[in-house]
Image (cartoon, rainbow, N blue to C red; front, side, top):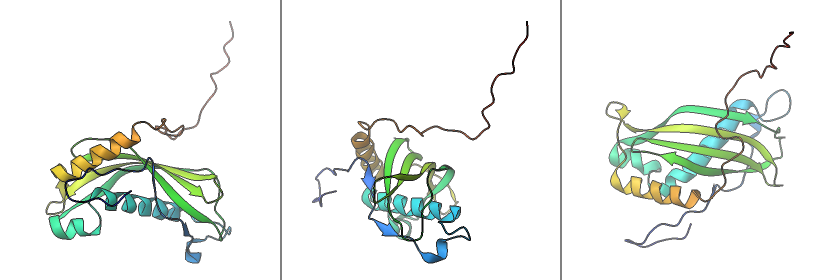
Length: 174
């Protein structure tokens, strides 16, 4: 995203791509790959990058006593990450309203393959409660501009998935 002056409209990448990073060795499990909990850490770092762009990064809580909480998240583990992996998180803003943001993220290996996806619903929170509260006008305007930039992207194949065992219909005899 380009640096902008006061009064200029923000332009957002579609999707937003977080900086490439490696894996912390402490995040590896006894199978020699990234422990499932740390996929969520990587997705969360991707959200942090998006929030910085939206104007609700680390200073948001201190300055306004507002924040975001994750209400729901669905992670799909597609391909394991080994210790030397370098990855980036692509984030797409799927939808929003005054109090909620719906995101879809892809954890991509630098070689171009998909490792995992995360679909999440985030709630805007007044920390004095804590309770949900509408986002301030400037944040809503930025979220709207990001949503508009992302609207042209095709719907992700894995968006809207649910967890369950797919069963074949029972054979019927006549």
